[in-house]
Image (cartoon, rainbow over all chains, first blue to last red; front, top):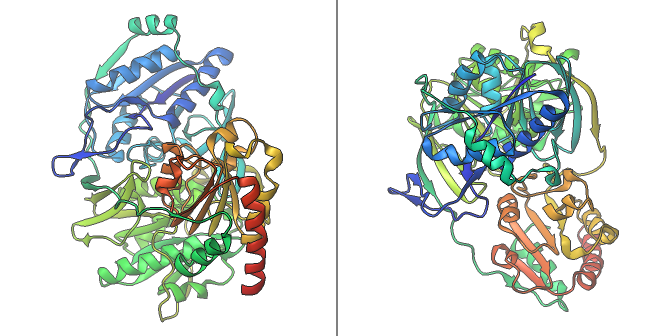
Length: 248
Length: 322
């Protein structure tokens, strides 16, 4: 089984979010970048398929050279080969088209993406990629088993979950649940040393065009001070929720 | 040229998100001086959509589409969009909406903007405001393709009633075997529980509750308020509550009218996930908990004393205001 894991290079969850160039660009100054958490759950599941079912695991990112440390980290976790498509994309459609070209040529059985990146939250790359490849697609995947060319996937739905079956090739939009938080692997020294020697292939982009562009960014208006209610006077809280906020 | 909206239903009834999506799509249709068409699957009574601005309903009735199927639904939506020559397709951001929207975008070669929170700033060029960085910022996105797909965030626009009636028309999309290659084997869904996605009120507990045995008072409050229950990440990681209750950056997003957090300190990842809730209440014994900076109302004190008292008062309030 050939697995491709799509890795998004995103600001660490605790990063301060600021913008530059007249609020048109994300300010990367002082920001630590990590593997997108939704992708990391999927990568860990891919490692399980590698160990238990002898799968090969390639990882891929569409981005500039600055994303390479993130790819090296994914290699240190255990992926075999990294691919970087050398362009700085402006939207998810462009990312998916670039991925589709390389993924299609690579004849992968299973392509694992995260359900969304935690920066732009587009939530579109896995679905568009599947659509372009005419592969089966399961979004918000919280469980995945593969046997031969058959996949059984659990999808989170509003208020529950459902079990789906599909044949390979399959694209998934994964999230926490596909593995547990406690299953996530922190790269060890040996992994880090090996990762340095693993292939990281830089591929030139096909020149896919974006369908959307971010015009500008804005931060939410600063929040007013919290209104504190005395624990001995909870009637006041009910009054505020009923008459002021009008939510009960 | 009409705007097309996908209106999700469950057991034949429209979901609130569908009515909100229709209300919103009507706003776009008005801005573009055109009409609004809805596509509905196996809905019992489509006339309800007229109240939310829909002029025409393409009503699909098919046993094969009884279970949601992203590929088949996307194909049907594409055919509806082509039939109506729609330039804008609106979906709400339910699990199913998020699942099929990118597939619709591919089918229509359309740019897609998700998590949109307001009517377009302008329709030519087509610019919408959406959330990004997990609610830590907004992003104005311009969709440059001929056809546009817009995903409307939950509870971002609200319901807007308008005059008029929706004409219903039976619609039979041409679906092929290729649309049915991902199959539902089983669905596991609590029948009479409010879901976090649909709830007006969410009551959430954190590590401050000390153990799963103390969730009785959280469930009681949820019962009184008709709310969904939720929890913080450490609570689900420790197995005190199921993962399906985890709200936050890597869990479920919350966009309810009211979010009540009990014993949750308010880590940045948690706040990111619940920021879209309109009113936030925090109950915590640590006045320095970061949640107090993000909340509208707060009570500093012992949750084990406050919550049972508050529950009694909420019961009285509900009895009086029923």
